[in-house]
Length: 71
Image 1: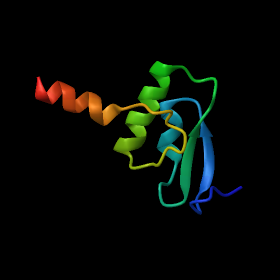
Image 2: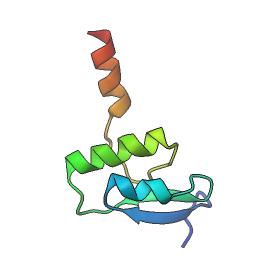
Image 3: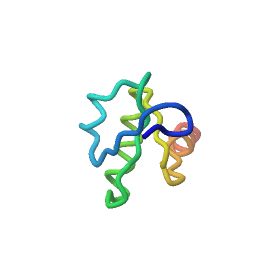
């Protein structure tokens, strides 16, 4: 089905799955069984590919980069 944003949802469980996704047509939902380390990797790769993640669970990648740049 469609996400309320109007895009179709794709379930992913690893960062490689993002390579085949068109950001103009799809948004990504991370599978619930994915652990934190892999979830962080998926979110980081999705940001690089400009793909929207609908359930990032509050992972603050930008905040971590800001801390490292400021110290």
